[in-house]
Length: 255
Image 1 (cartoon, rainbow, N blue to C red):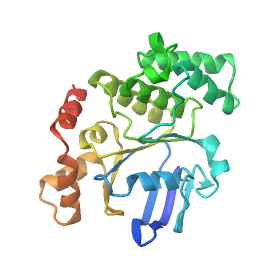
Image 2 (cartoon, rainbow, N blue to C red):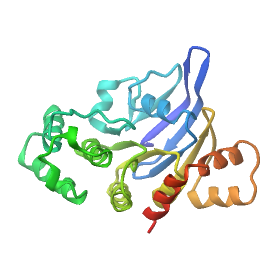
Image 3 (cartoon, helix red, strand yellow):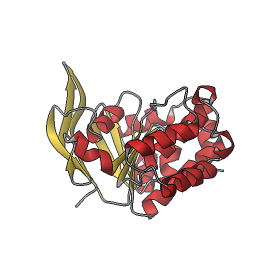
Image 4 (tube, rainbow, N blue to C red):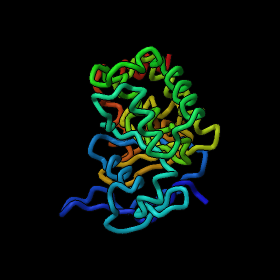
């Protein structure tokens, strides 16, 4: 059974077609890079797969649970949205303890896991600081730990390296790879091509709500370099036309 399976998954907002008959079949333990320019429908897709938005038509399942069963999905998935929900007045540690408590994980093993993950992300010394005083990168680290704390079957990450310095971005990439190596499926959405190239086993390119290409990262790169035409070429042009600061950050992350 695929960890993520969709058939003709579609989402409309009035007359706007946000996602157009999306077919996915992603094996367990895979890092699936979901690429596309801003506005391609990536976030809408993730919201459907996590039960936060109901499909207009088509079907989907994550970890064997129908995507319309939000309560059924919750134990099996972790989600890092582009704008993570964090309590400004809580400390980083209090935020994670609260989330753990909601999941019935308030035990010593969970606290040890929180300590380990914060340590890996160089956030242990700031765990007692209020989130209101955190930088964007520090918030992103807490949100990442929040998404993976309960060791879910499938993790959805929307721009997980946003706001991180090159060292922290590299650490997140290594942690993502470690998740997949331990059997967790990672659905990684971004518009930064080098980030996906570094960690993904397979890449899907979404353009105007449609999946226009799907293959291993190196295979897709070769197709683009060979002058693929139409929407595939357009998608790569949009993906690589990020701002110089984002490109520099991605290159620095690659060492």
